[in-house]
Image (cartoon, rainbow, N blue to C red):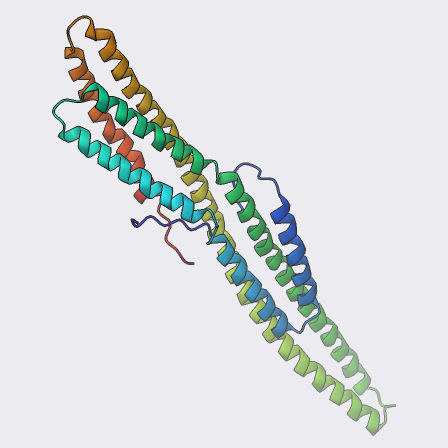
Length: 291
């Protein structure tokens, strides 16, 4: 296994992906979690949503198709390098070798088409998790709004208490009760300010995660596009190799295969084009694991 590493970690997905059963189920789960969080104190709700965010991010990084994709990529890249080296070392490529190489290249093209075809399922699962992560952000916004609303209500109550305390008709008992209420309001406001600060920090991290996942989705889109283009290039290469075999058969009656030497040279040169795309998959589109 080489250093290739795919990390499947909302915004930019493949063109308008549709929500399937997995996405609907995920929406039901996050709905339950949001309902639970809405009835919990700020500290417990923050913990619950934090754990949910972590599990959703992890799910975007561990798509079940990844092992299959990685294995196929490793096999294809190694096969391409092996064939390239063999062709470069051979003085003359005979008809049997051309046919064998064409068959192997066609197999590689088929493999690239197969793993590129996994894209819709990968993005459907990804869309479901990204929807969950986005919903967590909405719940955070609700909690911040609720806390701010509660603080505004407490401050308004304190203003009313101040007005009552300035009245000369209050008894000492009433004054003491109002002062106690005001102190309790101040204590709750202090706690709510801390909660808003905590939610605000969580919200900043959430926005950062969403931005990074969006960037990663764009990279993933490009990656699958590269797989599809690889399939096309390798398919064309296989056709060219088969053409060489047909050309040899067509020229055999003329007793001359000089044109084959020129064609073989051009075919060997074409490996650089193939390898550039392989290197792009192997190096240029490598995504490092982890957030």
